[in-house]
Image (cartoon, rainbow, N blue to C red; front, side):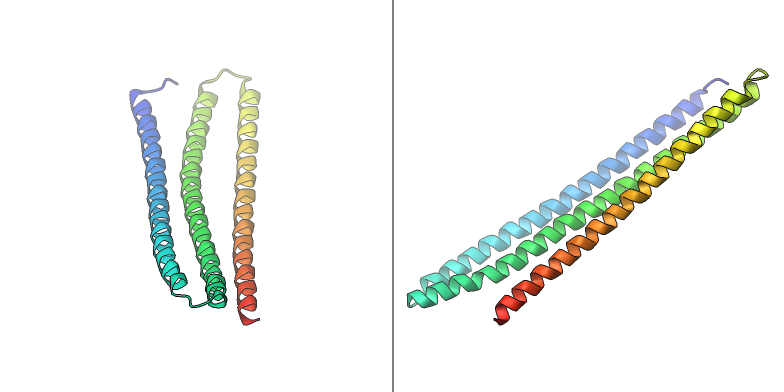
Length: 180
């Protein structure tokens, strides 16, 4: 029941692969956020130039106020789109990291179960109770982890539904305000 160099090497390789996967996911998320931010800044700059030019061209105070009011609607819509983009990046990243964690936990559970089987085979008579207790604790921990994962997924789905509903509500309010 000794750990072989091959087992140590396999465990090290699995850990490095998991770390690389996490790093790649994080860099992809950072790249998406950087692109989203760059586009938001570029759009805001272009809009401010266009809005300033329009305000300079106003012939009277009423036109000036009407122009200012007309700028609010597109700004709200762009803020909603930006927030939704950030939320989507966060949700995608969370899903990818969860997959890596679930895979790693599954591998660790398999390795631990294998180790327990080896211990049970090589253990002295009468130690079956202790091995059974450890297996029972492992099963309980796996069940708790599965329940936690399900709850986390449900919470993510509820949050996504709430974001979608809030976005639609704001869009509906802005359309109603426009119509009035």
